[in-house]
Amino acid sequence: MSETRTRSRRTASEESTRTPWWASAIVYQIYLRSFRDTNGDGIGDLNGVTEKLDYIAALGVDALWLTPFYKSPMEDYGYDIADFRSVDPVFGEIEDLDRLVMAARERGLRTIVDFTPCHTSKEHAWFRESRSSRDDPKADWYVWGDARRDGAPPSNYLSSFGGSAWTWEPRRSQYRYHAFLDCQPNLNLHNSEVVDAILGEMAFWLDRGIDGIRLDAVQCLLCDLDLRDNPPVASTGPSILVGGGPHNPFRQQEHVFDRGLPQSMHVFARMRALVDRYGEDRFLLGEASDVDSIPYCAEATAPGRLHAAYHFDLINSDLDVGVLRRQIRETSARPDATIMTVAGNQDSTRLMSNWGLRPSEQGYGRAFARTMLAIMATQKGGAVVFQGEELGLTEAELGYEDLRDPWGLHLYPDFKGRDGCRTPMPWRADAPNAGFGEGKPWLPVAQDHLPLAVDRQEADPDSVLNAYRRFLAWRREQPALRGGTQRLLDEAPEPLVVYERAANGERLLCAFNLADRPFTWRLPEAERAGWKVVGGHGLGGEIRSGGDEDGVIALGPYDGVFARKRG
Image (cartoon, rainbow, N blue to C red; front, side, top):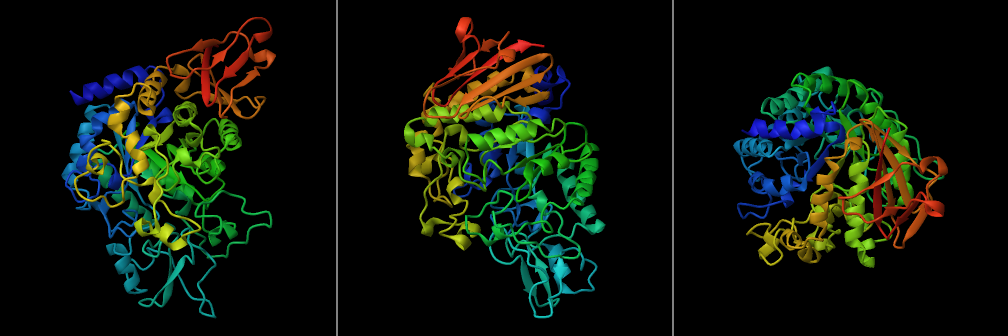
């Protein structure tokens, strides 16, 4: 029965258009520790996700992405993996994951698992062998380097999390490289044996029926074989957008030798060849940051490489209209790339708090949340929705004593870390711990989130949650949003974002106002004829017709409009 249900859902939205599901997918990201705790230990678990699958399916998304559930010392809360083939007991058992995947499939949902191809935990058996001796069979499985004559590290590489990316290892009398935390030594993917081993770990999960793999921090797959120093940034500042606070020393280098090396494309090709053996519906999604993001993602998703990629340009900036327009313009210029839109995740300030005008503080929170979903979900390549975005959650304000994130603890107060977006999901406003679980949560429940809890929003037809459900249901029925092309109308003045999607013989005009005041703009004369306004999506703008008003787009604050024509 489950296979029939899944196939019938694909028939309407995929097979008739002959485009793969991932080309326009909406993926729901679950930060596992904070989603739903079913055993009272204060930490979310796999059974909690299974319990909430009906909620996820009702959103209208295509897939769910689980953050790491592998055995781990949890120094970086799961992104320091000690065993790629086992589930950490804090999250459950491998059979719990099997049940989750099957139950998701019965609801027409695909399951994507997180994977760190660039590094392991220092507790991983591979690393323990590698550090034991320069003569060990796995001696070259990680990135090692000799000290310089003055005892300094082999290069000037810096960790994204602050400080040197090198740590002295007395067992080998060498430095080991870690792009992130000291507990996350980098694998040496110049070594084909290591690539083979990583592919074997990926195959383990594909064999168990996982639908896709999200690859963490793919810009860090390789660093320079000769460990050449990075040059300093130009006096005008860094040429790329990076995170970690305005004074993180990482920002002071051009990361030409430790991020985004072109040889990574060969590794992507090997990964794709593996995944393709499991059928055309399996999926590889790469995360890229600290690089020239859109060109890098376009190259990474060239034929025979990753299916899709996403970047942090909307996250590592004071998000505004100019940033959005630039992304749409640059992505549109690369029609063969599959670049997903992401405006928030487990590593970033929540979208509702990252927009420069803070619309929720101006009384426009609901309107802004609806319109940002419409923008994300109608761009070419699909989008990732981070848990809580569908509720309009803002960044939680936590005191230093409540912080758990090692990145934030290291760089505080310049950077408060990632805990503010990771607080527990509010399910029931009046329940203990907002319905997250019975035990004390690993992070405190944000009191500001209680009025936005799921039960409150389900009872309110005008809530952000119900707006998400309506919009994603409408989106599924729009042929122009499945693959095809995208074109920004640069003539539109800020604060407007106006673009056209075209596919399957249909054109869809998408126009949005991202300001706290009404705005009108008249389409260029050559663009005016033939548009018919489309309803059913929940936005309230209009395109006027006739006389001097012909082709005038009229939008309220944080509003949008869609119009369709053939050809």
